[in-house]
Image 1 (cartoon, rainbow, N blue to C red):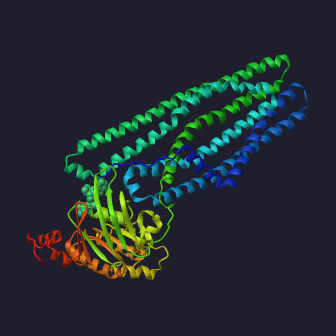
Image 2 (image 1 turned 45 degrees about the vertical axis):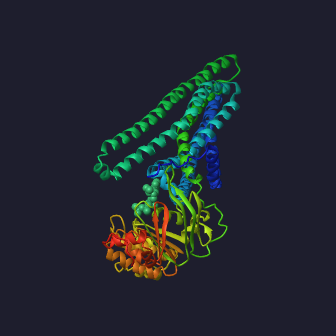
Image 3 (image 1 turned 90 degrees about the horizontal axis):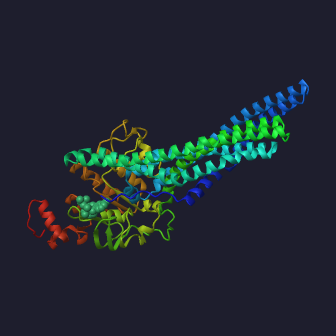
Length: 583
Ligand SMILES: Nc1ncnc2c1ncn2[C@@H]1O[C@H](COP(=O)(O)OP(=O)(O)OP(=O)(O)O)[C@@H](O)[C@H]1O
């Protein structure tokens, strides 16, 4: 097993650019939501201002008619504020939903484009946590945190503007809140990003540890590894717990500073306002309006500062989601040329799995287009590794693998899929109709084409293309699942097909039947069969014997028996004689 390498987390600059690009993709709607919010905040400042005006009118002994007019104005302002706030919230939610849907779709597309070796090395836990925790959290960021934070900022700005308009000196009292908030926020922000990233990372690891233990429960039991697995689970859970506790500590300190910060300015407005009123510098109404506004400002301010925590957490998740996009999916790799045909060539190919020893030590092999080659050899010789290199899942450490004269490593994934297909014994049937399961390989295939493909692989059971398969709907037996996988190849129509243990799970008779059907279908294509049973090798045009990461022999069945080398030994052993002998 390879050591797991975590998927990357996007750098702050990339996160910023991705986020702005996402917002700009809905710029008109975002603009409307902001305008509505400014209007709503404007309407809610009118009420305290009119209240101050009313106090002054009462103090000046103005007539009841004027007071009524002001009261009516206040009622209208409150009604407008309620209506506009609702409308602004509604618009912001709709935009948020659209943006978060876009984010989710993009994430799925990026996951599907991930090179297989990257996904394999990352392990299921990392990708699973990004999907189940970070994508929803990023959705919340876009749907709730950002609109709410924007609302809070706009509202606070409008309130401060209104205070300055009433009395700049009283508005200045708000500054008293700044030092405490600044110190608290600075302390928190310095630690929060790393804290939340560590929290997400440790959550992935504990998820990975638990799912690996559950998946391999039988093996763990068989090899008495229960204690090891439990200890591993405990360690990852302890790390997750410690990371959670740390972010909780950050929040506890931060919120305490926030709570204390906003008592100061409200008190200062009353004390200073009182003194100024007795000096005749302000009216009672102005003091009252500023006092109400100073309280009112604290609601969005307080909310905004609490949002910093949500925003931190949201952006930490967004960075993990965006990290997937940062992976070089080699889609960008320019396809300088496309394969001319199905000729496969390996030149001086060396390969080592990450952090492992070299497993292929200079393999040279040329398979002309249309040839059927069987690769045989003892377990661990490197047969499957050759299959992975030819299909482009891994790139050689040195040397070159080409299809139709083009380096497989330079072929973009989408192109590569059209030229080479690797079939293993894992045949996944999706919970969907038979038609959907097949059109994965060729989206525009019509029913007649699908039926032809099914008939070619001998899937006599498959006559209803609308039948629901997979999951609880209809559990398919391995042979039927394999027929679907093979029908997909026929539809995908690649130049090169690699069959790696593709028929290993079937009983020999079924395997032979399928291979016969395949032989007809694959006529004209290059076929590389990793042969675990020698009878399949016997049918091939040529046989490559791989031993300890090297090509030991190459030739037809008859030639190799004549040569009386490793293949002859395997063949004779298989037939019950251990001595090498000519065919
Ligand atoms: N994902 C991996 N990470 C690290 N080493 C690996 C990995 N897959 C295979 N190996 C190692 O590479 C070597 C070649 O393995 P490979 O699977 O290619 O052999 P094989 O000939 O196909 O064997 P088998 O017939 O048992 O499938 C072996 O030593 C194996 O342990």
